[in-house]
View 1 (cartoon, helix red, strand yellow):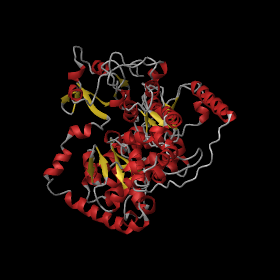
View 2 (cartoon, helix red, strand yellow; view 1 turned 45 degrees about the horizontal axis):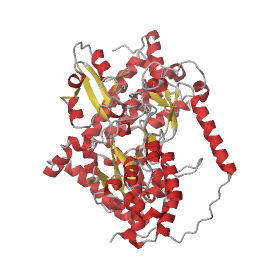
View 3 (tube, helix red, strand yellow; view 1 turned 120 degrees about the vertical axis):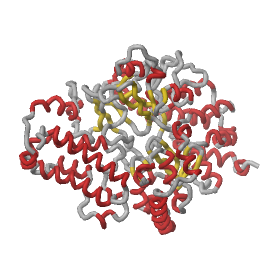
View 4 (cartoon, one colour; view 1 turned 45 degrees about the vertical axis):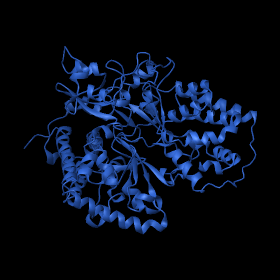
Length: 587
């Protein structure tokens, strides 16, 4: 017998009423809505209207409101549909709600105040909405609204029928929207919604971490319908070279190791000791196993490209001597969607082939990924060519969409999607930045100016030819105020190259016993802060702090050649860019 049959319809309706907001914030609600439509719980016209909306979270909430008002007698059928396996898979929100219902942790005796509706409040909401739309329409070109609560995903692909209206714009997907009220702050791991589980990422792969399983040392991360231990998940994501899952696995942009260190944030108090012991054991096991032969089971996990590729969003590609990265969510066809990013611009696959110098080409065969033609990704249905009738923002772009395609969708420096922030786009290169990530910081006054904005990379490139040749000892003794642009350029180079933000945050936040081994910690974020606050007097002081970062890396990671190699690569980048920035002559 279905456990839902033991609950009264009134209780299920109250549970529904109190959790409409959580349901509306679910990730990728398309399958959920399809299931409701299939069971005739929502009308066809409302289904079509919501699935075509730019922001589906509001449309989904409106549908739930309609169901409560017009169709609530079928509340049991609603929950049975919501808890179908096809809907529950990879849907942490509904998994949490089902667990709450089944284990009795939700209390039905909660008394709610009577519902109050007034004409004034509705009118005010409409006015605010209109004002907000007006503000968006008048936004400056150099500003792009960037919200963590929405991210472009495979919703851009055409549906089963391949049909889409021309009015359809950029599809969005709901991602872990905060339940905090406006103005309040709170980390994602403190949200009630994620009391028992957390959304985590490693590279381009996403999963759901069960907090109690991690505390017990069990396989705790669910991804692609498989359970992984943290180290296994790191290998599954293709990041095994880092050998440090506490850094490579992240929640809301924060390394998992930082959350583990703050045990009360991630684990129940009574499990803190168990977690600590398991954590140390896991570290020892991981270190010792790194030199041992890989087991058949582990090899199978690592060598299953198809399993991991479904979650991969970026692919390194080449065509002749030209290299770039293909971004899955921007791909529509050979001529639609500027999906390939080179050092200088975004291009369609056809333009990428032309830029490489090829004349007679077939973009599906001549663009190479991992030694194979790009067509291999299409045959595996990892990349999908949009229907000729597709009306998404890639296939039927408006002028604003075309402008947005010229620049990156993420910040060039921090590379995360953590908060609702604006991306500032450079007029001369494809880079985009958060205002506080760029150096110098971008003030609102500059954004409101209609003149073109150039990033420090482009400003440096334009002015570099004017520099006189100098010697190292002369540069080191000069006042940093005379060379602020060069130092800002060097920091941006390092932070941009620090792909997984290993050297940007405070290492004491995620590395155990770091302070006992390293007496003078230093990290790129700290150097940036000191530079912004004008705490350096000479260029030599600035260089000394940067070199301290690499010296600490070499000391702490003596037995970790992979991390050492990454640190050495970054140090070599700094040395070469330093010589270029100050036009230093070789001895």
